[in-house]
Amino acid sequence: MDQARPPLARWETWLGHPPQGVYPPIHMILVWDNLAGHCSYEITKWLFAHGIMPLYTPIGGSWLNMAESLQRIIVGRTLSGQHPQTPEQIIEWLEQTVRGWNADPTPFVWNGTSAADDGNGLVCSA
Image (cartoon, rainbow, N blue to C red; front, side):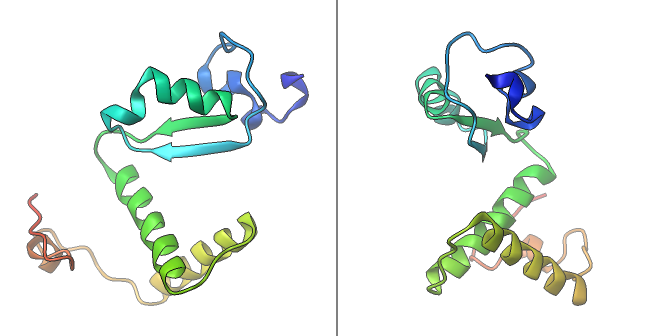
C-alpha cells in the first residue's frame, strides 16, 4: 500500500527504513524543534499513530530562524482575524510575505540593532 504513494508520502523515505509497526499513511509533516518533550517515545508514537511524521530542526542555525519566521507570519495573520481554509492559502500568505521582504530587504549587520533589541524587549547575544 505504501509503495503506491509518492516517495515523500512514504514512512520509509523519512525513516530511512521500513517502519517497525503498522501506521496510517503520512498525511502531515510536522516541523518541530528539539525540545526534550518533542523527542519522547510517547509523543513520537502518538504522532506516527495519527499519520504525522515529525521532522526535527537542527539544534542551532538558520532552520530554527526560518521556522520561527513562518510561525510569526501565521500567528500574526491569525490574530488579525484571518483564518486560512486551505494549504494553498497558507502558501499564498508566505509568498506574499517573501515578496514584501524582497521588495524592501533589510541588510544583515552583525551586532546591529536587532542584537541589542529583537523588538520584544529581549536582549540577544551572539
